[in-house]
Length: 454
Image 1 (cartoon, rainbow, N blue to C red):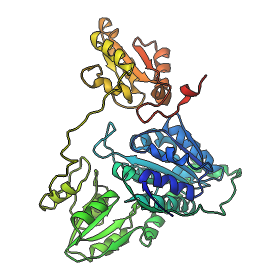
Image 2: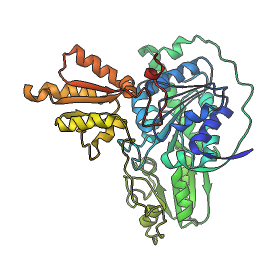
Image 3: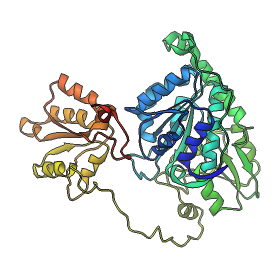
Image 4: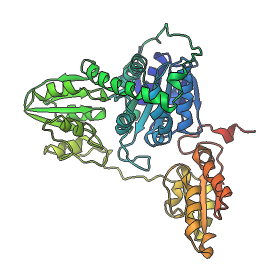
């Protein structure tokens, strides 16, 4: 039973094999295909939520009801879901709960390049990071086991390359014998009043220490000793690049990136002459290794910005560059609105009117591109209306009428509706245009509430 699966497809398969009963998400590249793939398994109740916070809350409810639940989103979606996530770390779970964060180094389809390993440390929850599709499946199943064994939500981090690259995956039958969901009343654990939450905080801190110790013996954290000259600590897709570019180097491959297996790191460091950390984006592992008092090199030779590639790794280690592939020589093709898209006429008119357009995430972001050139701001999901309200507050009356907020229907219900209520309540003067697709368009035409409304 083998198939060639993308990382996203493998996570979906892993959730099915783990006995997940509920899966919920808000679409966002590079995570979208996880939920779409789960719909192949009728045993799983899969649904799109209006935003990532709601998706996580649906998953929490399923977990508290005793079922295993999977919640998926792109990296910036965790910003929206952070409110319930941080408190869920205190309450713990009933059925296992896994939150997938799909990060986007190089900003292939995102407005920022944040490294969500920091969320795991900040929220004090364990995080696993797979290096290929087989690990996507295996780590998803393991994440549910860890969630229930340690009474904690678990984050699973992927990146664009892992999400969309394909490799051979060994499949298994779904797990059997899981407890049947049923209501359990335990308000001291699940009602986070200050008096209850204070006691739960101590449990969270003890859990983190225990996980760090136990991680040292987990097979997903392993030493691959090939020599003593160079030792590299790495995880995720960076592991694949290290094996390609530095095949003779000894490697400490981490499958759990939070909490780190500190005793295992010390042991590995004692076996090599020079210690390096190879990781994308932030010096997340590097800073913690340095805090142990170990001499290590990382961001001195590798950039904080952008996606790691074999070529950038070769450059960092002073190795000869490989010849460019045919794909790397292809010209770039910036995104554009679909032929015949009715939004084109809206942005064409706004440009001619010389409007100040407070924009939003989605297809309408493409109004920035020439020849339309009709977008002045774009920050995050749902921000257009609130920002329009704010800028009108400070403008002279003759300029206020030039301010237009542009937002799509899915984004309006995601977080924009709050801004509109605020604008009405505070008597804002900006114009709001809702471009109604009745779908979540840019991520692949997923259903949303307006489409379901007769």
